[in-house]
Image 1: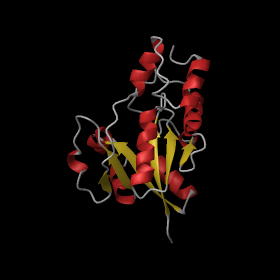
Image 2: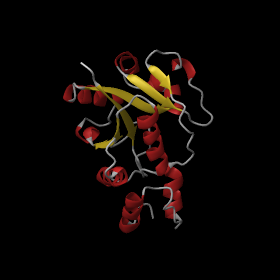
Image 3: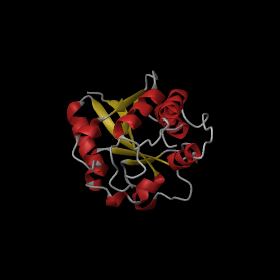
Image 4: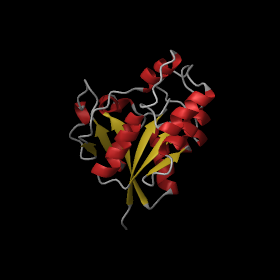
Length: 193
């Protein structure tokens, strides 16, 4: 049975920006993935919760960003899993619900360096593929030569959500950094001000 290959792009997307979109677009056009699913995380156990916009607002922003591009999908599956959410639990649940799909984790080189801290990271490496994009100042580390790890030569994108949150908070117009419908929603809702 041939499985459809789906890349899972996990993130808090606080807010989603054009760097995320470009990376997902690269993954779906320049690797063997047929789709990329944006997995909006309610709370990353390794991140500070204070600066996080409400889950449903971040989910809305991702829906607005992805819009009608047929190769992108949005998932709120982690909203219905126990908190904090762990990648392995999401992978197992998605695999159970979608037996016709083969899932890969999309992550940055910075995440790969601390991969051994992930819950059941050995099971992820055994049962799934990991597509790793470059991050400035990071090398692949100990997992570089794993058969399930693929280093992808995507462009390095320097934009960060924290930079954009700060820019909005000080009144900057950053409309060209964020997909138009998502940016308009941020402005209309006075997020990050």
